Image (cartoon, rainbow, N blue to C red; front, side):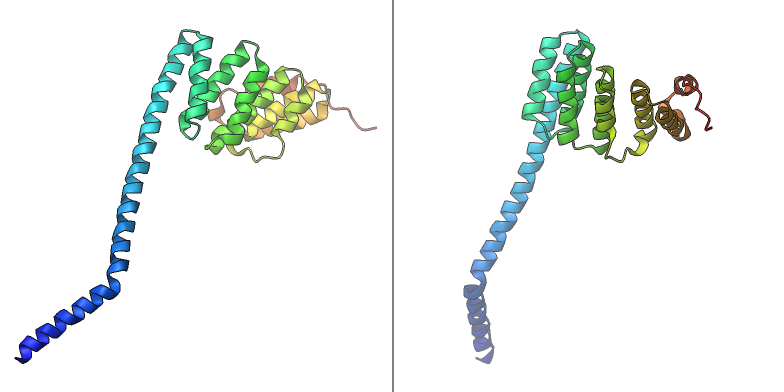
Length: 214
């Protein structure tokens, strides 16, 4: 009898516990379902968007190989508009900027590079976009704009290339001493990964001799 009562008491306690806690248990289970489901949906969405962007980027590459500027521009813009959060967007912007710069559309190319600088997810590619934008400004005859573009950022591994462009800009502005300092900074930081430095050395050697102080 005592065992029966003991069992009944345990059942009663279990019922009371369930009544007191079932709402939180059910809520926790629902939250778990939502979290797991949401995570799987997010993974699927990211993967699907990446695959779609990759397919479009292949179309962009094919169009560029065929020198079909109109098709390349259309596909590239679609990548930037629909999939700006994917890595393919930055590469598409670089590709379009290169095509536009080589066809004399410097303003359009500059906008592509500025988009990378503002919206890109990769810090290295943002620095590269800034460097190319400065070169574009310099090629367009605006040496001061080139200097302004390179200012206010830490260039990291691009430091020698940034310094070289600064030197080129100073030459355009007739500031030989500043150009000499920039070229020397570039040479001091140059590495084999950046390629041949002989042209940079020639730029430095071609500068007028530094004026001696009286």
